[in-house]
Amino acid sequence: MLESTAHRTPTSEVLLNGVKLVGNEVEVAWAGGSSPARFSPVWLRDHCHSKESLHPDTLQRQVDTFAIPADIAPAKLEISDGGRTLRIVWKHDGSASILPAAFLWNIAQGEGRERAPHRRLWDRAVIGENFPSVSHAEIMSGDAGLLRWLSTVEEYGFALATGVPATLEATKELVTRIGYVRETIFGGMWDFTANMAFKDTAYTSAAIGPHTDGTYSIDSPGHQLFHCLKFDGSGGDSTLVDGFKVADQIRQSDPMAFEVLSTVKVPAQYLGDGVHLRAEHPVIGLDHNGDLAQIAYNNYDRAPFRLATPRMNAFYRALKLFNQLINDPSNEITMRLEPGTALLFDNWRTLHGRRSYQGFRRLCGAYLNKEDFDSKLRVLRARTREGAH
Ligand SMILES: [Fe+2]
Image (cartoon, rainbow, N blue to C red; front, side, top):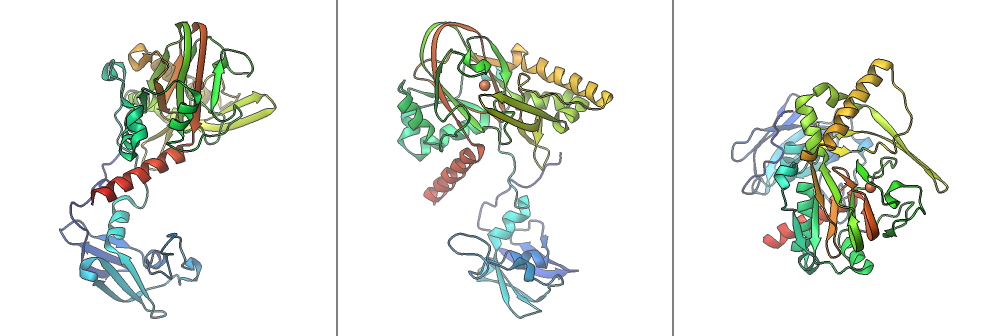
Protein backbone atom coordinates (compact mmCIF):
# COMPACT_ATOMS: atom_id res chain seq x y z
CA MET A 1 0.00 0.00 0.00
CA LEU A 2 1.32 3.37 -0.96
CA GLU A 3 1.74 6.10 1.57
CA SER A 4 -0.55 8.95 0.70
CA THR A 5 -0.69 12.58 1.62
CA ALA A 6 -4.33 12.32 2.74
CA HIS A 7 -3.62 13.25 6.33
CA ARG A 8 -1.55 16.29 5.43
CA THR A 9 -3.26 19.41 6.55
CA PRO A 10 -1.66 22.78 6.05
CA THR A 11 -0.61 24.55 9.20
CA SER A 12 -1.97 27.85 7.87
CA GLU A 13 -4.93 28.82 5.72
CA VAL A 14 -5.07 27.23 2.27
CA LEU A 15 -4.62 29.78 -0.50
CA LEU A 16 -4.49 29.45 -4.27
CA ASN A 17 -1.77 31.24 -6.20
CA GLY A 18 -2.26 30.02 -9.76
CA VAL A 19 -4.80 28.50 -12.14
CA LYS A 20 -4.50 27.43 -15.75
CA LEU A 21 -6.03 25.12 -18.31
CA VAL A 22 -3.90 22.07 -19.08
CA GLY A 23 -5.44 20.06 -21.91
CA ASN A 24 -9.05 19.75 -20.82
CA GLU A 25 -8.28 19.97 -17.09
CA VAL A 26 -8.14 22.92 -14.72
CA GLU A 27 -4.88 22.98 -12.79
CA VAL A 28 -4.66 24.91 -9.55
CA ALA A 29 -1.47 25.75 -7.68
CA TRP A 30 -1.26 26.34 -3.95
CA ALA A 31 0.59 29.08 -2.14
CA GLY A 32 3.40 27.39 -0.24
CA GLY A 33 4.52 25.14 -3.06
CA SER A 34 2.52 21.91 -2.59
CA SER A 35 2.02 19.92 -5.81
CA PRO A 36 -0.66 21.39 -8.07
CA ALA A 37 -3.94 19.49 -8.50
CA ARG A 38 -6.03 18.97 -11.62
CA PHE A 39 -9.82 18.88 -11.79
CA SER A 40 -12.27 18.07 -14.55
CA PRO A 41 -14.49 20.98 -15.68
CA VAL A 42 -17.67 18.85 -15.31
CA TRP A 43 -16.65 18.05 -11.74
CA LEU A 44 -15.94 21.72 -10.99
CA ARG A 45 -19.35 22.81 -12.32
CA ASP A 46 -21.03 20.00 -10.34
CA HIS A 47 -19.32 21.18 -7.12
CA CYS A 48 -19.91 24.91 -7.49
CA HIS A 49 -20.44 26.51 -4.06
CA SER A 50 -22.76 29.37 -5.09
CA LYS A 51 -26.03 29.27 -3.19
CA GLU A 52 -27.90 28.37 -6.40
CA SER A 53 -25.65 25.30 -6.75
CA LEU A 54 -25.17 24.24 -3.13
CA HIS A 55 -27.90 24.84 -0.58
CA PRO A 56 -26.34 27.14 2.03
CA ASP A 57 -28.10 25.50 5.00
CA THR A 58 -28.41 21.82 4.13
CA LEU A 59 -25.26 21.68 1.93
CA GLN A 60 -27.29 19.58 -0.49
CA ARG A 61 -26.56 19.76 -4.20
CA GLN A 62 -28.87 22.07 -6.14
CA VAL A 63 -27.01 21.84 -9.46
CA ASP A 64 -28.79 20.02 -12.26
CA THR A 65 -25.84 17.66 -12.76
CA PHE A 66 -27.32 16.16 -15.89
CA ALA A 67 -27.79 19.51 -17.63
CA ILE A 68 -24.03 20.14 -17.59
CA PRO A 69 -22.71 19.82 -21.16
CA ALA A 70 -20.24 16.95 -21.50
CA ASP A 71 -17.83 19.31 -23.29
CA ILE A 72 -18.15 22.15 -20.75
CA ALA A 73 -15.08 24.40 -20.82
CA PRO A 74 -13.98 27.53 -18.98
CA ALA A 75 -13.96 30.89 -20.77
CA LYS A 76 -12.18 32.56 -17.86
CA LEU A 77 -10.28 31.28 -14.82
CA GLU A 78 -9.47 33.58 -11.94
CA ILE A 79 -8.40 33.53 -8.32
CA SER A 80 -10.33 35.91 -6.12
CA ASP A 81 -10.78 36.81 -2.49
CA GLY A 82 -7.02 36.93 -1.85
CA GLY A 83 -6.49 33.32 -2.98
CA ARG A 84 -9.43 31.90 -1.05
CA THR A 85 -11.70 31.30 -4.06
CA LEU A 86 -11.45 29.91 -7.57
CA ARG A 87 -13.87 31.61 -9.95
CA ILE A 88 -14.71 30.08 -13.32
CA VAL A 89 -16.81 31.66 -16.08
CA TRP A 90 -18.19 29.01 -18.40
CA LYS A 91 -18.01 29.28 -22.17
CA HIS A 92 -21.40 27.74 -23.01
CA ASP A 93 -23.66 30.09 -21.03
CA GLY A 94 -21.46 32.73 -19.41
CA SER A 95 -22.47 31.60 -15.90
CA ALA A 96 -19.89 31.65 -13.11
CA SER A 97 -18.92 28.98 -10.59
CA ILE A 98 -17.07 29.54 -7.36
CA LEU A 99 -15.05 26.98 -5.41
CA PRO A 100 -13.34 27.64 -2.08
CA ALA A 101 -9.60 26.93 -2.00
CA ALA A 102 -9.91 24.91 1.23
CA PHE A 103 -12.59 22.69 -0.34
CA LEU A 104 -10.40 21.98 -3.38
CA TRP A 105 -7.42 21.30 -1.14
CA ASN A 106 -9.31 18.72 0.94
CA ILE A 107 -10.54 16.93 -2.16
CA ALA A 108 -7.05 16.96 -3.65
CA GLN A 109 -5.65 15.28 -0.51
CA GLY A 110 -8.15 12.45 -0.04
CA GLU A 111 -10.31 12.39 -3.19
CA GLY A 112 -13.28 13.15 -0.94
CA ARG A 113 -13.06 9.79 0.82
CA GLU A 114 -12.35 9.26 4.48
CA ARG A 115 -9.27 7.31 5.31
CA ALA A 116 -9.00 4.69 8.03
CA PRO A 117 -8.42 6.41 11.37
CA HIS A 118 -5.24 6.17 13.36
CA ARG A 119 -5.28 2.85 15.19
CA ARG A 120 -2.98 1.28 17.71
CA LEU A 121 -2.84 -2.46 17.09
CA TRP A 122 -2.35 -4.52 20.23
CA ASP A 123 -1.81 -7.92 21.70
CA ARG A 124 -1.53 -9.11 25.29
CA ALA A 125 2.00 -7.75 25.68
CA VAL A 126 1.03 -4.28 24.42
CA ILE A 127 -2.03 -3.88 26.65
CA GLY A 128 -0.77 -5.68 29.77
CA GLU A 129 -2.98 -4.76 32.67
CA ASN A 130 -3.44 -1.19 31.50
CA PHE A 131 -6.86 -1.31 29.93
CA PRO A 132 -7.70 2.02 28.32
CA SER A 133 -10.41 3.63 30.41
CA VAL A 134 -12.23 6.88 31.06
CA SER A 135 -14.31 7.65 34.12
CA HIS A 136 -18.09 7.77 33.93
CA ALA A 137 -17.99 11.21 35.56
CA GLU A 138 -15.72 12.54 32.80
CA ILE A 139 -17.79 10.97 30.01
CA MET A 140 -21.03 12.40 31.37
CA SER A 141 -19.61 15.85 32.19
CA GLY A 142 -19.22 17.21 28.67
CA ASP A 143 -18.02 16.84 25.10
CA ALA A 144 -14.35 16.54 26.01
CA GLY A 145 -14.85 13.44 28.20
CA LEU A 146 -17.11 11.73 25.70
CA LEU A 147 -14.68 12.52 22.88
CA ARG A 148 -11.82 11.04 24.90
CA TRP A 149 -13.78 7.80 25.47
CA LEU A 150 -14.85 7.42 21.84
CA SER A 151 -11.42 8.36 20.46
CA THR A 152 -9.87 5.74 22.73
CA VAL A 153 -12.29 3.13 21.39
CA GLU A 154 -11.41 4.19 17.85
CA GLU A 155 -7.71 3.87 18.60
CA TYR A 156 -7.72 0.56 20.53
CA GLY A 157 -11.01 -1.02 19.48
CA PHE A 158 -12.25 -0.95 23.09
CA ALA A 159 -12.25 1.13 26.27
CA LEU A 160 -13.74 0.84 29.71
CA ALA A 161 -15.94 3.32 31.49
CA THR A 162 -15.27 3.22 35.22
CA GLY A 163 -17.47 4.29 38.10
CA VAL A 164 -20.75 3.66 36.28
CA PRO A 165 -23.71 3.24 38.65
CA ALA A 166 -24.64 -0.45 38.47
CA THR A 167 -28.16 0.05 37.14
CA LEU A 168 -29.82 -0.52 33.80
CA GLU A 169 -30.95 3.13 33.71
CA ALA A 170 -27.44 4.55 34.22
CA THR A 171 -26.08 2.17 31.60
CA LYS A 172 -28.70 3.28 29.11
CA GLU A 173 -27.91 6.92 29.84
CA LEU A 174 -24.25 6.18 29.15
CA VAL A 175 -24.99 4.42 25.84
CA THR A 176 -27.29 7.14 24.63
CA ARG A 177 -24.51 9.71 25.16
CA ILE A 178 -23.11 8.10 21.99
CA GLY A 179 -26.23 7.46 19.93
CA TYR A 180 -29.50 5.63 19.99
CA VAL A 181 -29.64 2.00 21.03
CA ARG A 182 -29.94 -0.33 18.09
CA GLU A 183 -33.03 -2.50 18.05
CA THR A 184 -32.41 -6.10 17.04
CA ILE A 185 -34.17 -9.43 17.38
CA PHE A 186 -32.89 -9.40 20.97
CA GLY A 187 -34.63 -6.10 21.71
CA GLY A 188 -33.01 -2.72 22.43
CA MET A 189 -31.06 -2.48 25.70
CA TRP A 190 -30.66 -6.06 26.74
CA ASP A 191 -30.47 -7.33 30.29
CA PHE A 192 -29.99 -11.01 30.81
CA THR A 193 -29.04 -13.77 33.15
CA ALA A 194 -28.12 -17.29 32.08
CA ASN A 195 -31.19 -18.88 30.63
CA MET A 196 -32.21 -20.53 27.39
CA ALA A 197 -34.96 -18.15 26.30
CA PHE A 198 -33.07 -17.50 23.05
CA LYS A 199 -31.41 -20.03 20.80
CA ASP A 200 -27.99 -18.48 21.19
CA THR A 201 -24.94 -19.63 23.14
CA ALA A 202 -24.55 -16.12 24.63
CA TYR A 203 -27.52 -16.92 26.87
CA THR A 204 -25.90 -19.92 28.56
CA SER A 205 -23.02 -20.09 31.05
CA ALA A 206 -20.73 -22.11 28.75
CA ALA A 207 -17.45 -20.74 27.38
CA ILE A 208 -17.73 -18.78 24.13
CA GLY A 209 -14.77 -18.50 21.77
CA PRO A 210 -13.70 -15.20 20.22
CA HIS A 211 -16.16 -13.91 17.64
CA THR A 212 -17.82 -10.79 16.34
CA ASP A 213 -21.58 -10.34 16.69
CA GLY A 214 -24.09 -10.11 13.89
CA THR A 215 -22.17 -11.81 11.08
CA TYR A 216 -25.68 -12.69 9.84
CA SER A 217 -26.58 -8.99 9.66
CA ILE A 218 -25.94 -7.01 6.48
CA ASP A 219 -24.94 -4.10 8.72
CA SER A 220 -23.32 -5.88 11.66
CA PRO A 221 -23.56 -3.87 14.89
CA GLY A 222 -20.74 -1.36 14.95
CA HIS A 223 -20.20 -1.20 18.68
CA GLN A 224 -21.33 -3.08 21.71
CA LEU A 225 -21.42 -2.15 25.37
CA PHE A 226 -21.41 -4.66 28.23
CA HIS A 227 -22.08 -3.81 31.84
CA CYS A 228 -22.21 -6.53 34.47
CA LEU A 229 -24.81 -5.48 37.02
CA LYS A 230 -24.40 -8.42 39.36
CA PHE A 231 -22.08 -11.37 39.58
CA ASP A 232 -22.19 -14.00 42.26
CA GLY A 233 -20.03 -16.92 41.26
CA SER A 234 -16.71 -17.80 39.69
CA GLY A 235 -15.16 -17.71 36.22
CA GLY A 236 -16.83 -15.82 33.40
CA ASP A 237 -13.90 -13.56 32.50
CA SER A 238 -14.43 -11.69 29.23
CA THR A 239 -11.85 -12.10 26.50
CA LEU A 240 -10.94 -9.61 23.78
CA VAL A 241 -8.73 -10.00 20.73
CA ASP A 242 -7.64 -7.25 18.34
CA GLY A 243 -8.92 -8.64 15.03
CA PHE A 244 -7.00 -5.99 13.09
CA LYS A 245 -3.76 -7.04 14.76
CA VAL A 246 -4.42 -10.66 13.77
CA ALA A 247 -5.36 -9.60 10.22
CA ASP A 248 -2.17 -7.57 10.02
CA GLN A 249 -0.16 -10.56 11.25
CA ILE A 250 -1.70 -12.70 8.49
CA ARG A 251 -1.12 -10.00 5.87
CA GLN A 252 2.60 -10.02 6.76
CA SER A 253 3.12 -13.74 7.28
CA ASP A 254 0.75 -15.45 4.85
CA PRO A 255 -0.39 -13.24 1.94
CA MET A 256 -2.25 -16.14 0.30
CA ALA A 257 -4.36 -16.72 3.41
CA PHE A 258 -4.92 -12.97 3.64
CA GLU A 259 -6.15 -12.87 0.05
CA VAL A 260 -8.65 -15.67 0.74
CA LEU A 261 -9.91 -14.17 4.00
CA SER A 262 -10.32 -10.72 2.49
CA THR A 263 -12.15 -11.83 -0.67
CA VAL A 264 -14.27 -14.91 0.07
CA LYS A 265 -17.66 -13.75 1.28
CA VAL A 266 -18.77 -16.06 4.04
CA PRO A 267 -22.52 -16.46 4.50
CA ALA A 268 -23.87 -16.50 8.04
CA GLN A 269 -27.35 -17.00 9.36
CA TYR A 270 -29.53 -16.77 12.41
CA LEU A 271 -32.44 -19.18 12.41
CA GLY A 272 -35.08 -19.33 15.09
CA ASP A 273 -37.48 -17.25 17.16
CA GLY A 274 -39.51 -16.69 13.98
CA VAL A 275 -36.66 -15.03 12.04
CA HIS A 276 -34.19 -16.07 9.40
CA LEU A 277 -31.43 -13.50 9.06
CA ARG A 278 -28.72 -14.02 6.49
CA ALA A 279 -25.75 -11.95 5.27
CA GLU A 280 -22.32 -12.40 3.72
CA HIS A 281 -19.05 -10.79 4.77
CA PRO A 282 -15.41 -11.59 4.15
CA VAL A 283 -13.66 -12.51 7.41
CA ILE A 284 -11.35 -9.53 6.80
CA GLY A 285 -13.10 -6.59 5.14
CA LEU A 286 -10.96 -3.94 3.45
CA ASP A 287 -11.74 -0.37 2.44
CA HIS A 288 -11.04 1.32 -0.91
CA ASN A 289 -7.39 1.83 0.11
CA GLY A 290 -6.84 -1.76 1.17
CA ASP A 291 -6.88 -0.69 4.83
CA LEU A 292 -8.62 -2.92 7.38
CA ALA A 293 -12.29 -2.08 7.69
CA GLN A 294 -14.23 -4.93 9.29
CA ILE A 295 -13.68 -8.29 10.89
CA ALA A 296 -16.70 -10.61 10.63
CA TYR A 297 -16.09 -13.96 12.25
CA ASN A 298 -18.41 -16.29 14.09
CA ASN A 299 -17.79 -19.92 13.30
CA TYR A 300 -20.95 -20.92 15.17
CA ASP A 301 -23.13 -18.93 12.79
CA ARG A 302 -21.39 -19.68 9.47
CA ALA A 303 -23.95 -20.93 6.93
CA PRO A 304 -23.24 -23.81 4.55
CA PHE A 305 -21.55 -22.70 1.35
CA ARG A 306 -19.24 -24.35 -1.12
CA LEU A 307 -16.43 -23.25 -3.42
CA ALA A 308 -14.52 -25.18 -6.06
CA THR A 309 -12.40 -27.71 -4.14
CA PRO A 310 -8.98 -26.01 -4.48
CA ARG A 311 -10.48 -22.68 -3.35
CA MET A 312 -12.51 -24.39 -0.63
CA ASN A 313 -9.36 -26.04 0.69
CA ALA A 314 -7.54 -22.71 0.61
CA PHE A 315 -10.45 -21.19 2.54
CA TYR A 316 -10.34 -23.89 5.25
CA ARG A 317 -6.58 -23.50 5.54
CA ALA A 318 -6.88 -19.71 5.91
CA LEU A 319 -9.78 -19.96 8.35
CA LYS A 320 -7.82 -22.39 10.47
CA LEU A 321 -4.91 -19.95 10.61
CA PHE A 322 -7.25 -17.11 11.60
CA ASN A 323 -8.88 -19.26 14.29
CA GLN A 324 -5.50 -20.35 15.59
CA LEU A 325 -4.27 -16.77 15.91
CA ILE A 326 -7.40 -15.40 17.60
CA ASN A 327 -7.16 -18.25 20.12
CA ASP A 328 -3.46 -17.71 20.73
CA PRO A 329 -3.11 -16.56 24.37
CA SER A 330 -0.51 -13.99 23.29
CA ASN A 331 -3.21 -12.19 21.27
CA GLU A 332 -5.89 -12.29 23.93
CA ILE A 333 -6.61 -10.09 26.93
CA THR A 334 -8.98 -11.11 29.68
CA MET A 335 -10.93 -9.06 32.15
CA ARG A 336 -13.50 -9.64 34.82
CA LEU A 337 -16.48 -7.42 34.17
CA GLU A 338 -17.41 -6.00 37.55
CA PRO A 339 -20.47 -3.95 38.46
CA GLY A 340 -19.48 -0.33 37.86
CA THR A 341 -17.16 -0.99 34.90
CA ALA A 342 -18.72 -0.91 31.43
CA LEU A 343 -16.88 -2.19 28.39
CA LEU A 344 -17.44 -0.50 25.03
CA PHE A 345 -15.87 -2.17 22.02
CA ASP A 346 -15.74 -1.94 18.24
CA ASN A 347 -17.53 -5.03 16.95
CA TRP A 348 -16.05 -4.43 13.47
CA ARG A 349 -12.56 -4.88 14.90
CA THR A 350 -12.42 -6.51 18.31
CA LEU A 351 -13.44 -10.13 18.81
CA HIS A 352 -15.00 -10.96 22.14
CA GLY A 353 -15.56 -14.16 24.05
CA ARG A 354 -16.12 -15.43 27.53
CA ARG A 355 -14.80 -18.12 29.84
CA SER A 356 -17.36 -20.47 31.34
CA TYR A 357 -18.76 -19.54 34.71
CA GLN A 358 -20.67 -20.91 37.61
CA GLY A 359 -23.14 -18.90 39.56
CA PHE A 360 -25.44 -16.01 38.84
CA ARG A 361 -24.59 -13.28 36.42
CA ARG A 362 -26.69 -10.35 35.28
CA LEU A 363 -25.27 -8.56 32.28
CA CYS A 364 -26.84 -5.67 30.44
CA GLY A 365 -25.78 -3.88 27.34
CA ALA A 366 -26.61 -2.54 23.93
CA TYR A 367 -25.62 -2.42 20.32
CA LEU A 368 -24.88 0.79 18.45
CA ASN A 369 -24.74 1.28 14.71
CA LYS A 370 -21.30 2.04 13.35
CA GLU A 371 -22.55 5.08 11.47
CA ASP A 372 -23.96 6.63 14.66
CA PHE A 373 -20.73 6.12 16.58
CA ASP A 374 -18.72 7.61 13.69
CA SER A 375 -21.16 10.50 13.37
CA LYS A 376 -20.81 11.36 17.06
CA LEU A 377 -17.03 11.31 16.77
CA ARG A 378 -17.09 13.66 13.74
CA VAL A 379 -19.48 16.05 15.47
CA LEU A 380 -17.46 16.10 18.70
CA ARG A 381 -14.22 16.67 16.79
CA ALA A 382 -15.74 19.50 14.75
CA ARG A 383 -17.09 21.13 17.95
CA THR A 384 -13.72 20.80 19.63
CA ARG A 385 -12.00 22.42 16.61
CA GLU A 386 -14.56 25.25 16.58
CA GLY A 387 -14.09 25.74 20.31
CA ALA A 388 -10.34 26.00 19.81
CA HIS A 389 -10.63 28.89 17.34
FE1 LIG B 1 -21.16 -12.05 21.24
